[in-house]
Length: 272
Image 1 (spheres, one colour):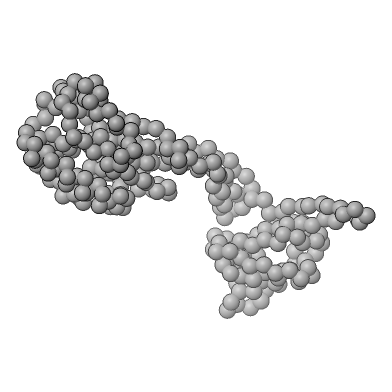
Image 2 (spheres, one colour; image 1 turned 30 degrees about the horizontal axis):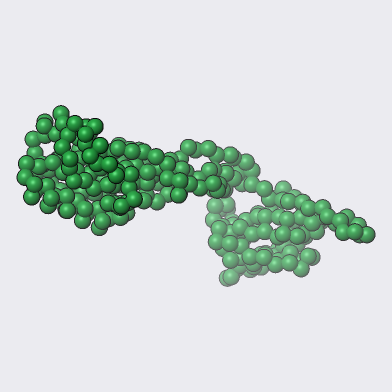
């Protein structure tokens, strides 16, 4: 993932920042004295100096995904990781260094989100957004003199660049979708009563994956009505046990009636 991010950053500067690789190098090496004395042409250096979890974006919730076979997967949301780069420019002329630094800063501020056409490798299919922070005062790099002394190199002007990526540990639990919940309750001085919550999907005939949105479902005997969501899912929260007739009303289609037993194994409804 980190090498894909490196390539994405490089493509951003080349395609959006118009950096000519024939004239300027872009690399991700450690900018110590040995490295800097060996470079032969103007160079933009992205040094990855810190990797840590972003606690402000830490999520504790779970994502639930359902497939067409009635299986639900409960998956923990990805951790969010801050990757902090130090951007420096190395040239023989201070004026060229400053002009190139300002050009890089302008490009990074112009693109606070990576354009799709520069994304590389695993970054193409990420479902979580990639967050970017450029030259912010609350960055980690606050002791530049100590940093450059540790690298035995001269003090350089730099840009702090932080990219936040999701880290998916793929911890998931898979189980059949719960379609029935049974609740028994008893009021003081009354007989026990059982109510059943049921859930199902209204789908097109022959296509389980094509749910019908905004379909109206009527449980005739119970006198209850509900409506499907955007994916075709519906539920009744308090149906009595026994035989029920469900009517399915879809705009532009004939009313369809189906006999169902509650509780039962399946409450999916098919419409022609």
